Length: 168
Image 1 (cartoon, rainbow, N blue to C red):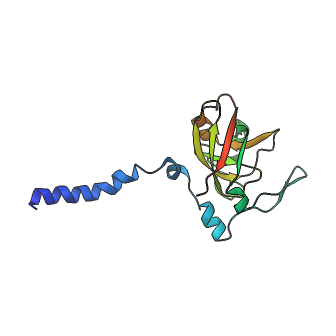
Image 2 (cartoon, one colour):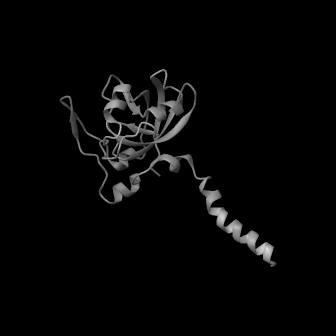
Image 3 (cartoon, one colour):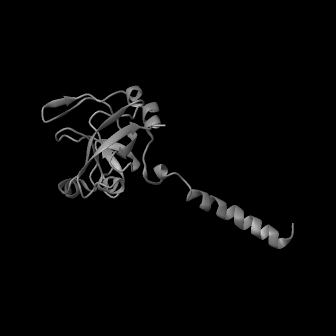
């Protein structure tokens, strides 16, 4: 191998990891924190009962959650929530950031990963469930502002969605 070939090969070896890092799945590009599997394995899964406005909510087990699917109405954290909770901890103790896709659910153990599909547009996204809610009407999931934008219902406020747990 001549000197110029060796330099080209070395440059390729140095640039390959950088190029491959840009090919990672969209899931890993915005979902941080401990994985649901790791939380379960290390006893850091949060699924203890809790009370909101006098009502007791009993989250499901990790095993129940792994095959969970639901269809219903999604909303996103409203402007008052953005002002009130930006930079504040979620129910799982992670910092709420409305510019990152995340979600709140009443019954899933925390954390959980769910694929949310807007049934009107077929747009879908995988989000990290790290908070509790929604506690308004018949809504099944609250999404961060960024998740609602990516699903195409930010301006509308709500959308009919299907959620599927994808912890693995």
